[in-house]
Image (cartoon, rainbow over all chains, first blue to last red):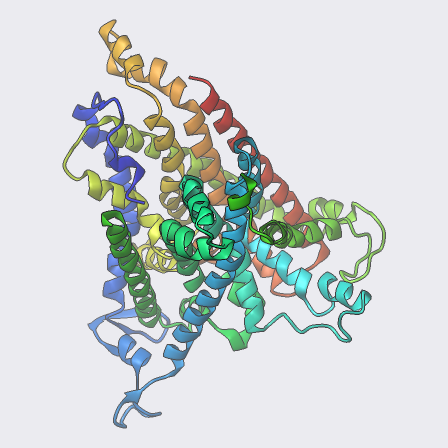
Length: 307
Length: 266
């Protein structure tokens, strides 16, 4: 993950050295002005005062963070106690993202292993099959999943038809539906990095373990997993991060009871009932969580590289 | 030899994985050909919902949304590919320069910031500079987040091209621009096309950021579909979804084939 562009090319070519700046200027300008600067402004916004028509007043205020963490009673005059509403939403989002990540790992690892142990010429086709759904519009995939698992949808009809269940399984608007939706959205992100790690794995190690009477599963646990761990960690991160801030799966599959961070943020920017500074503050907290996850990953990757 | 590579059950899980990935898509495709007005019962094979997409009561709305989606995707993909190509040339052929690591991090920022955070930040930015949200703001946001997707295949391809070809051209008095246009660009073409196609799909796919910065009245296909689905999944949505699905699969397949062909030649 250290970056493709970090490596000096084999030829050590620097024929464009003198015009590096003009070549990079458009990238710096576009991402700098339209993404980095806006994120900075968002940070400022989270410390402004909310105005009633859904705008802001340029007055420094901690109200947004106060609203997130503290409850001062109905009239704001009671001693502050910890506010659980938003922490609960964050906790639920983290939990949903963790379950989705574990689901992806349980299905993704065997799949990646299976593909990586195919003959070289057929691996490309398997990988292609795994990645195609990722390129299909996420909204369409989520709507399709909802159509499939809804109360009188094809899945329930099929299960009823073969007599496995007596009444339709109420799947839509449950936690499970959201977890399934997140799993379905990001599964390829788990398979690809694990595949890359397994493909580089030296199978002679497994053979040596087998010669020393280790069973398959002992070999998997003691030899394979420690070696392909960087791929597993990368896959988990690639699933966990987008799941945490996901909007479509919780919104379409979860219903009102299973509110997640994405919907909470979305609500702050809709119509005159919104609260932009609060929405900015929630976004800042989400981004902080993601940055912590990325930093932990960078540290574990650096440790793995040193070992 | 099969021994250590084989784990019982892994084939079954792989098949399960593919079933899970494809079942919802296949079901929605099948039901888009349903002749019945009800989405629960099967009324025989029919193309009526495809006709409905193009001539039905909602056709004007979806037509306008499709036009917006398509033009934004074409413009955003083209611009971001040009920007990314210049960046890739500088990063791969520029030697070591100050700020290289920072630039690499900058290119990756759109991939690291959660989409909904990008959406919020972009909306706040446009509100602050007083730019009315609409077609232009959506286009700017799309160009920005498409850059890393265009960059990755171009940089990967460029790393595989040795510098000798351009060096030879320069030795024969080609200007830097001539060496780029006549030597490097043709060699780089598969990467550029691949980046262009990926950026196009990424732009077409986006819902969250578009939904934040589009303003009232302006729709792209995903936002129009989302608005419609909120009232229930109707058969014409399945037909539109199937059409969009076909476009995505077509483009990804093209990108895959071009890349594979590119890898075989020089």
